[in-house]
Length: 187
Image (tube, rainbow, N blue to C red; front, top):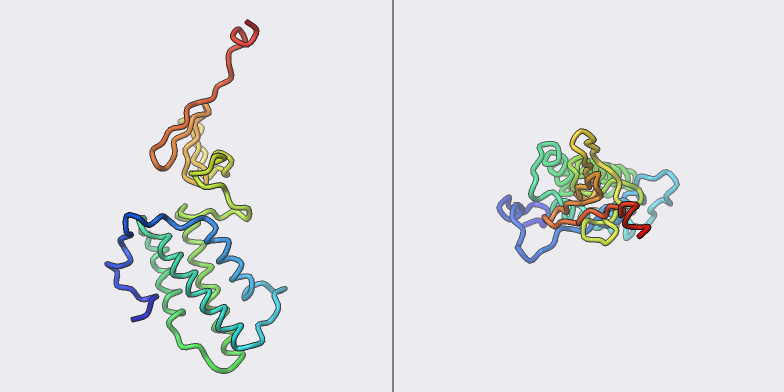
């Protein structure tokens, strides 16, 4: 059985002890994609280099599939299915055909990342936002600003309120840190 083709029952549930993938997963995947898709990237000359990039892309695809657990979206499921289909194809033997296959595979993985970002499951910024568990979690960029209700959702899932309080994705609360009134400061 292919590792990329696990039964749906195995993919849908995550063992309770397993943590969600780190946000740096996207950065590592983008580095691998840059080897294939960037125009300035050096050409992969040897069969060993090409095999290595294909294996890395397959590994990234498996990890990205785990990042999608919990919130199924039709667009994301379709992107994952398309990328898995390309991953399962036999790698051609001719150099130009291999390059074409590699670009197709990398493009499919890039589409999966775009869908994960659209679903709000991973950070899509070039400098990744701090995770919700970090002490500086409020430094994340705003994903959705809702001034009519006085809060904003940050990229890492934290809800930050106008009174400077926060609600963490885990349900934790960060108390508001309002400045002291003038009378309290002068006395």
